[in-house]
Image (cartoon, rainbow, N blue to C red; front, side):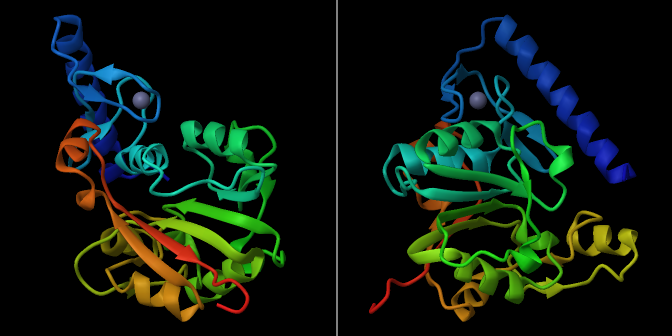
Length: 249
Ligand SMILES: [Zn+2]
């Protein structure tokens, strides 16, 4: 669904991208870096309210760059030879990185047909139907789309092996989470939650919802990374690292 808000965001993004390309052509110093594609860049293009959003070389977002940076610095690690369920696999650099690391890599979505990635399977998070299969579950900007997030978090927990991890990133605001539903008109969802196909807006209490499903949790904020890296790599957002406790602790 194309809305005025979306069209405006796209327009600003294209303008900012063209401006960045022109500056680069004129010899602007490439003092920023994209950990998703390895390019040195003169800056990142704007998207919505985010001034330093996209990589001009590969298009990676601040949250995509955050995950690469955390992997690069061994703050988090993908399970070598493990089983990985990657929902909404539209971050190409992470598809490649996780696929290379995994023994059993499953890219998946409720609507697999919209992806160019090879082998995307249809998975409905409301009914994953897997028990103890995965070492890692990764979903960036997915949980704000699911009808019942408590049920989905329980399903993710069940699908993980004991000791397995879920890496979750969601759009956040400072206020408590507000829930909606798919019975609301799309325009109301867009107005309240920022996008027509979002059914909630998360706040910091997202962590409580993850804990309620039985996970141990570590909250990794981009803003807690070294200040120099936050600026140079233009890192953003928060990674909720949820761990299914091992049997016996
Ligand atoms: Zn890049």
